[in-house]
Length: 81
Image (cartoon, rainbow, N blue to C red; front, side):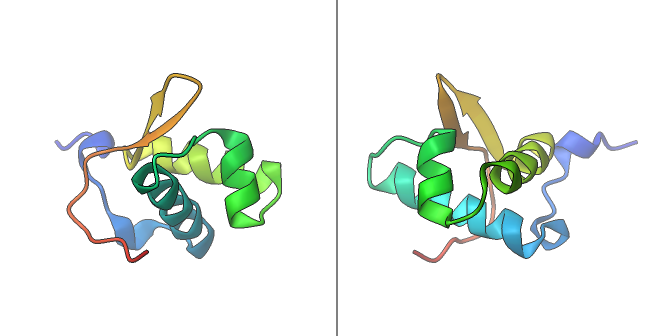
C-alpha cells in the first residue's frame, strides 16, 4: 500500500493550489520571504484561501514548513515563472 504522502499528484491540485505553489516558488527563487503574509500579497487571494491551499499542499508534500514560512517540497514537475 502506498502512503498518500508519497504520491505527489500535481493533477489533483486545484487552480488555487497551483497559483499558491507558483507564488511560493517565485518567492523562493527571488530569495524573498515565503510566509503567509507574503503569499497572500503575491497571490491576491484572501488569507483563508491561502491557508486552505497551503494545508492541501503541505498534506500532499508539495510544500514543507520552514522556520516561520514555507519551502518547496520534492517535485518532479516544472513551474513556469
